[in-house]
Amino acid sequence: MALNYFRDRLFDLLNKSEGMGIADLNANERNSLLTVRTEDWNVFEIICRQAAGKEDGWTTAN
Image (cartoon, rainbow, N blue to C red; front, side, top):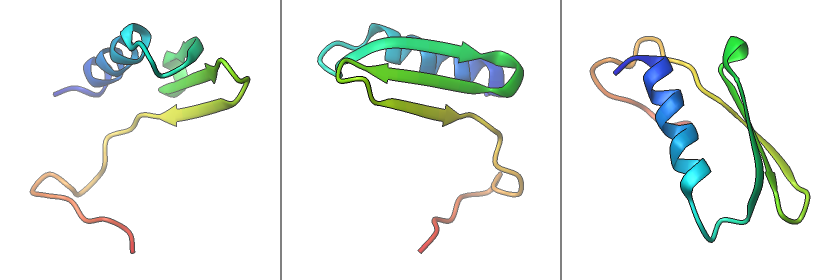
């Protein structure tokens, strides 16, 4: 799956979600950044990037 496709689908999921309290959603495609503003005015940034060297599996930080 390509990064742009993944980011677009993630945007669609967030945009169509109900019950999460999302008031506004902005996509900055140049920086692969999604900015989410909630109904209580909190702002979150989601950075989408391909994880290098993780093709055969993944590891999580401790």
